[in-house]
Image (cartoon, rainbow over all chains, first blue to last red; front, side, top):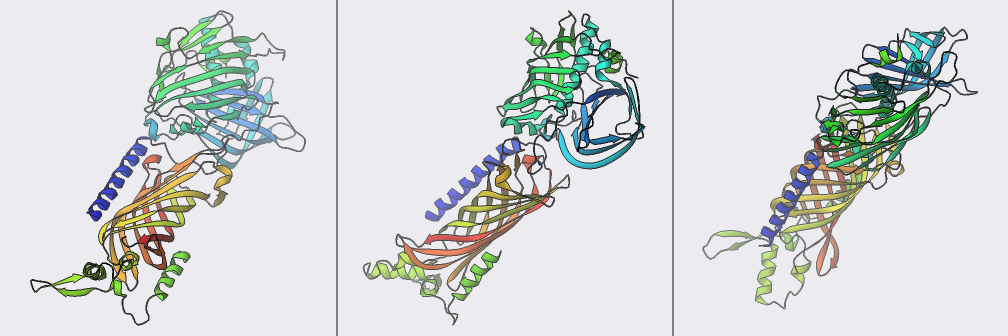
Length: 344
Length: 246
């Protein structure tokens, strides 16, 4: 009898272990993490000049830090693939750069690389999400500045015909629907540049932020990432005076509520200020407004998430100058960033 | 491995030099009423004595370990746990942990369960070595090896071994500003344990000491979207138990 009871107890233990295992399988969380990985390694450089270029559906952002005594100059580069207003993938580099005495060539040494792949065809639980790795990659590039233009050649990863972003923003208005649509496309560049640096963003690795974390912005300010709940979770990315790109300041929460399949909706509203600069370098009137993810007073029009991807509803963009636009996350940006900023 | 080998050697040295078996372990043939022979081990002999005169051997049966190869073995295990695996993305991970657990087996041939709690102490990735406490706070883990075992008596010692299914679980939430790590490599493995008398009695039961070792090949991690290419887990350590029936 004792042996029979012992065997029965052993089988019960095995059954319990199988149930625990099944629960864990249901909560699969993407690939292995890096060991002892610091979440944020960004060292802000407040003196950055921000340059923007477009190549097809990709928008490129290059931030160049000024000279510092005894330390190399910093650079940050972000490439945002934007065939849809919500964006689909992104990559970024951080490192050091220098230019020759005549400013005709420059050397960029990437130290950190971020990748946020397009995983719309992958189930949420199998996604990788945003990752970061250390690299040591040197790129020699031709470098030509003229006014608010910068042409980088010879380094395909960062090549482009750039415009200084605050100067390009001087074309933006504040009163029409088109102005509001353009403001959305521009503000979204800053938001997505921050997203790509959130390790695990876009994948199940976001459960990491059950233990909240704060990230420094590239130029100034910060953003805070926090997730509550597990099978039905609420992720809040709160931007605190975020200046990720020169001339764009963002404040407020961006909230996503979704279940473990990545189905749900967004809420929260961001206040933003665009600070254009005129051709003479003088400050132009600011453009301010709100970007509402919750439908702009119509909850049924809140941005809808299916399988971890924004597929419905609208981003509601309101400008203080009267411009109002409802931007669909799943359609081609119209107008595009290149059109809005008159990029070459 | 070294500790286990030493313990096995000590166990071997503790065996009688002439190779004879201990009384409690001796198996005798007893003629049955039907004229056939049946095997009865030392426990049966002791029980027969006790039935004849219960006062004659009041405690002998209670302190004899391995009087029978049958019955349950419940042991506390202390040891080391190392799991090493390669991800599909090409990274090589190694985790070393202190381990405390329960080793149970049931019957001369029967199921066994090794359930171990882990305290990860060191983590490695691609040659970089980290003290786990520096980067992870409430880090814990578990290891389960469950399967089927066979027992043998080797002079005064009892040896068991068998194959089973294996899983290791590591849950290491990062300290503030650091990334979490978790893993659940699953696979197949095998274990072996040796027990022998410690000489002491506790609660009228003989204390046994011994050693265990196990090795598992891991090939599937459902928690990590099957990012596991392959891995190995090894465990070894000492075990303590109380044997004999009261």
